[in-house]
Image (cartoon, helix red, strand yellow):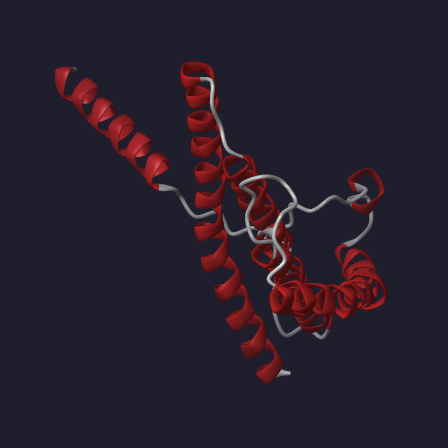
Length: 200
């Protein structure tokens, strides 16, 4: 079990690192969208490449961040029912869900998406739109995203089983780490409190 937990920690680190990078794809998509709108309104011209790269980046951010969403417990659940159960009951529901639903769905998507990507890669498939982009990079996001989601699902499964065996604490409890903004706000409040105390 310790080897599996080591694997789980490795996957969690990979997922966290990717999650912090993927957010920049949203910014890129937003900036390209804004630039495209400005160029279109100002110069009455545009390119399908701009439109396509926007949805390439958005698709990539959505698919590559799926594992990050799962790691942080931000995926959709029926909280109204789920949160009323005991911690152990919730863990068993998660074990069932990761084993019976998440893993098979990811494997089925991989089974169908890998040949789809490979065919587009080999043929050099290009968008049918004038000035459009090659398609295989966006097709690659599907198997890549579901591979990352599958790995994170297995990591979560390992943690749930380890908890049920009494080897680790509740993995669903978020350990809140202060952001740089929160630390700055706290430092400002502390200085103001010290300044107020010095006046009195």
